[in-house]
Amino acid sequence: YTQDDGTLRVAFVVPSLQNTQGSNLWGMNSPYMTTPDPGLLLPNRYTWSGGTLVTNTASNALQIRGAGFTNYTYNALPTNTKETVAFRIFNYSFQNAAALTYDVYYQPMNSGTDQPDITKATKIASASDVIVPAIPGRSNNANAPDNWHDASFQWTTPSVAGNGFLHIVLKYGGTQLSAANDSGYFEVGIYDANEFLGLSGANAINANALLDTRAALEADGAKLSVVTVMTDEEGNEIQGSLPLDKPFKIAATVRLDGLPDGRSGLPIVKVNLYANGIPVGSKHIPYLASGQSRTIEMDYDPSDHAEIVKLKSLKVLVFSEATGFKRNGEDALSASVEIDFAENKGGGGHKGSSGCNAGAAGLMGSLAALGAVLRTRKKRGV
Image (cartoon, one colour):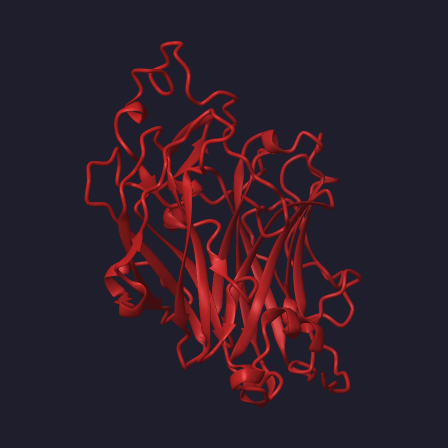
């Protein structure tokens, strides 16, 4: 699947999935040879720890990849908008799967720390009990039909701006190999288009149009800030020198304050991670409410980046797509934290994008925060 920064990520590549060489996983004795296995695309169910593939216990384990909207990018949509949601259902087995159905639920986020929890979600009756036709099993035959089904349903967004989770639950009536891939979620952000361009109804803009206007935030006082914390694979905060030869996590807490004219929030806030100036990760927040904080976690594993022989610096850059971000940093609502290892083999100092020192050199566990104020510009129309 493709990450937010355009990187194509492949977890496993198996040249010949079905063979007769006695493999317990892919051979004639494989359970995939006897039982269908329909499921959603949940590549985060497992993660690497110390070179071993283990079950992911984090909240993103059931995050659906490849789900999104027909007319809106980054899962950010205006309020009161009817839109088509598209996702893919796979059959991971070699055996054909019978027809099935699925249900859809929506869970609003009441705070920036809410986690996906289907018990707090409400079933969307109009999008549930949808019948999916039989899905063929996998095959080595190039002319065989695809082992997936592209599903879709109509959903009308809430009338109030904010974030939420769409949950999808598959219901298979027959025997299946595993139900572990039968339910998942993805986050959506709902913004009020009237706060940006004064448009509503049929004239409501989509996210792509919003990127070009920059009319909404051209006022003093708007500020993004970011705070970073480094942890090891076990989740322990790194207090001393950073082990540059081992994987670690970067938790970036992003906060938005001071939006003018009572605007409620920003759609499409991106969090990018750079190592030695090279992009190594990117995530986005579909919608960030004013006065709200969100924490985004990203991993750095040296074994994944052979092009980086020696880690000299890390940079976390946060910016809003809604302001028409430019690479030179001008005319952007942005914030960044940079950690420089050049003078210290272990930890390094935190530096802000304005050149201010935002932390003590050598102390990786310290926090660094920097907010950049949006410059006043003359309001443009579309």
